[in-house]
Every structure is written in C-alpha cells, then in structure tokens.
Length: 167
Image 1 (cartoon, one colour):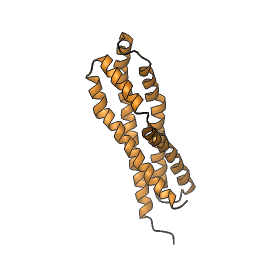
Image 2: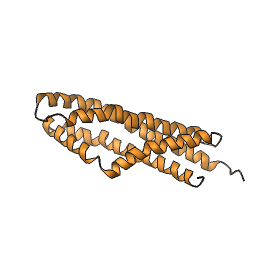
Image 3: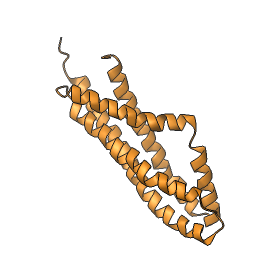
Image 4: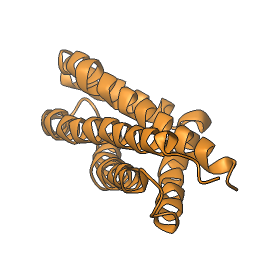
C-alpha cells in the first residue's frame, strides 16, 4: 500500500488539473462561442455536447477523481503527521465540494433542464439566456476549484517529497 499511495496522490492531482483544464476551455471558449449563436442553434449544440461528453473515458475520470480525492483524504488523515498531509486534505476536499458537488447540484440539473427543452420555442430561448449566465458562472467555480485543488495537492506532494525519510 505504501508504494501505491504516492501514485494515487500524483494521479489525483493530475486528474484535478485535467478536469480544471476542461472546465477552463468551456468557460473561456465554448460557452462564448455558443452565446454567439441564435438560441435554437446554441441549445442544439449544447444538447449535443452534453450527450457526447457522457462517454466512458470522461465518466471514468469524472467519477474516479472524487473517489481518489476521498482516498487521499482518508490516507492523509491516517498519516496526519506526514509533511503535506493538511495540504492534501485541503486539495482533495476542495475538489469534492467545489467541483464534484457543484457539478452534481448546479450544472447537471441545468443540463437536464436544457436537454428536455425544445430548441425552437420561446421558453427554450428564455431558458438559454439564463443557462448561459448561470451555467457559466458555476463552471467558473468548477474551473477555479479544480485548479486550486490540483495546486494544493501538488504542494502536499512536494512537502511530502522534501521530508527526510524516517530510516
């Protein structure tokens, strides 16, 4: 288990960074591009994106990252006296709360509402107007928390690697 823990921590930091990069691209580029389209076109495009992204590779990383974060928290609580443990806990907890839970409680319900709309209706156009603002705002939160989580986990890894070995 001692050999697997460093690999788990590294993989968790990398996964948080990977997810942060994905969210950054949406906040910086994708949503701005979709906002330039007519509402029915933007809705149709986002509905397609939301369906295509639910593929095995994305879902595997998306679901494994908070699970890995939970394992990092447990291992770091167990090894509280190890250098960097508090940083590892903070990073992993931030990802779970600020990225995974925000996704499940804010972005996914908005995606579901958009998915059930008919793009050509006036109701859908009104929904799209709110969606662009609200979904993107919550996506900014996910971007920042994912990247900050990756940073905190990396600091924890660095502090742990710098510590003298107890041999």
